Image 1 (cartoon, rainbow, N blue to C red):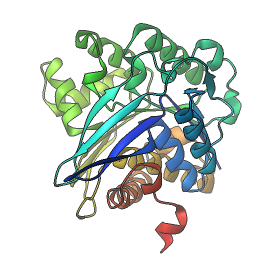
Image 2 (cartoon, rainbow, N blue to C red):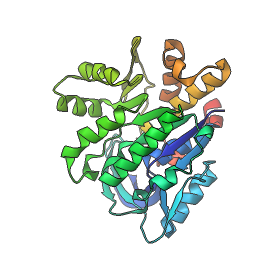
Image 3 (cartoon, helix red, strand yellow):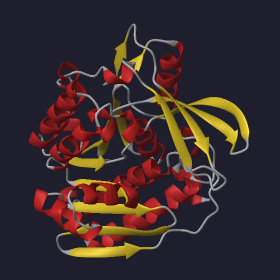
Length: 318
């Protein structure tokens, strides 16, 4: 089984009982941590690399990662820094809004020295999001990790996952994101994110997708909630329908999708004894992986929370 390393933040989601109930429950979350857990729950070998506080919330996060089967040997335990939290609100359709409390928190402490401890020979896929780009030091450390992954011929997956409210200076976002796009093999965006970044370039979404291909991105995946998923590489472009559901909570749905997509590709690579990079050109296998990912994302939307809502391989078999 090919291993995935997910790099970035783990934090505490304060999730309401429902769209109409103001009582909140603290639950483990954070997009890269969700991806690590989702991959592990499907049966994959999964690592998480990020800073975790030694406070009570941090202890809970570490335990929950381990309980879900995630290898935490690359975690940096941070003293004297709090755990980041996010207050999540839900509308009647289960769609989320966020209020982040993330100022000098433990997730922002992952240095080049920690990256140097990673045994890249054990890693097939490196996954990350844009929340490690919001300040200069974390951005530099992320680029360092990307270059280390690339030099070791690791497939790099970037879920852009924009959270503009985390940026003190939004004018820095386009250049920092693009610096990472230049290093990435798979790029996942929501349609809203694609539209936002395309507008900055003064192009439409198809024009932006074409631009990403010129940067060297090998596969672009654009999700759009209940609507079709757009998948584009240099040799083909697809629109793939997703399951129709009534969403209870969309928290971690995108994380479930990309983790499941990467898991399906890694399975295909094992079965076909193929290089992961070559599989991105295989339209049939990529289509199958998107369908699997869409099913996992849909199942995630039908439960509350992040870790608990991510489907296990046993649940998919039912």
